[in-house]
Image (cartoon, rainbow, N blue to C red; front, side, top):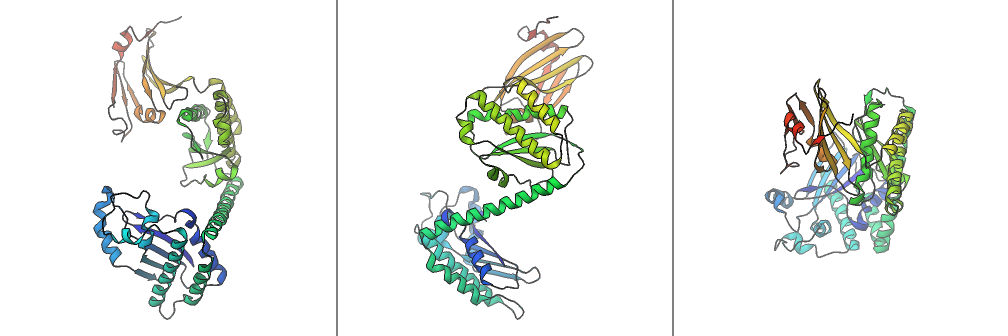
Amino acid sequence: MKIYLHPTTVGRTGGPLNGNLKYLDSYIQSELDRSGFQSSFDGLWFGISFMPLYISPGIANMEEGYRSFYDSLPYSRLNRKNKTIDVTVKAPEFAEHFQEAISSKKKAGSESATESNSKSETELAQILLDKYLEVADVIRSKLKKDDVFDHKTFKTVIESIRPKLNADFLISTSNSEHDRQQQAEIEIAENKREERRKSDLVKDTLIRDIRLYFNYDLPKKLFYLRRYAEIVLGLLIRKNFLCPHYHHLYIRIANTKEEAIINAFPIEDWHTYGIAVLKEEVLLHAAPSVQQSLVLNALKDGLLDIAELDKLDKTKIIEAIKEAEEIGILSEILFRAKENNKIAFVISTKTIFEHNEDEIFFTILDKQTNRIARWKFGQENIFTIAGWFKTINLTNKKITIKPRANMDLVLEGKQKIIELDVEKELADPVKIVLNQE
């Protein structure tokens, strides 16, 4: 029987214990599995419930309802059809353990505030064992003739753990369980990658997006390095780079292959992951030109990793990376364009060195007279730009640029819909570009 321990309080349910208690429930599960403990139920959802030390204003209206539930505990339900058990017990001792920031606004006289008393991890571990035993007793009281729940073995295992509990044991257990779970995650990820390697799906979906995800905190001044993903994306779209059913390619960059792999799980079928290794220390201490090369190389490694797994066109990737290097991350590149028989309109962007913003340029061309107007519209984060300038409607007299839906908050204080008078812009002496022919 698998036991799913989950804390529950006002506005929150789920998540592991903190600190060196994080993997204690996994250790208890492994001891039960080794003991030969038997049950006719497959899963036990074990809730430890507490009233929080402080109720934030956003969930204050939920307190009364949760208090009624808390006061009614213990709660239990044995679902024999689905072979599951759900038991929740009071655990006020864990309120402070889960309080992210203990506030001076604690409610006077609250049960959890008076009973938590800043208990040590060892004390909380002992209390957790008590809760396991309480849950076992609740289950035993609900059993029917054909139910199986080996209460004696369960209790023996829990009590056998109790003498071991001290700070050193918790630290050691936490470290070993962390390593064991991480290795299990790596094996699962490697198996999924091997499944991809053995398959050969039809490549019929044009790439739409590439994103770089770093496993470490990237300083803000280096955010601009992500711009290489946009440049390579544009090049691959022009090369008609096709994928099997997905269209978003995410590159997970980490200090080691193992770190990258366990954080590269696709959760939807419209995106996939590739991995790349780039050590944080190497990137942060390199010269700017070297940093640009390192990130572009990591992008290449990640894309080629996907190509190797899913049998994509490696030649197009290598060509796009080479062209991106020649273009340079600080070059002005085309973002969006629209034209008719008379007028052409272009939005281009240029990355600002060590800034998380791009300069935005508008260009209007009258094809019949060869008149050109060009000006800097402003500068903004590339993700905001993508949503702001979503669609372009163009006539001989007017250009209208509209954002995608739900951009009101992002564009607060900005001109949401941009309308340009073509003749007025072409006649503006500040914006006129002289024809060099």
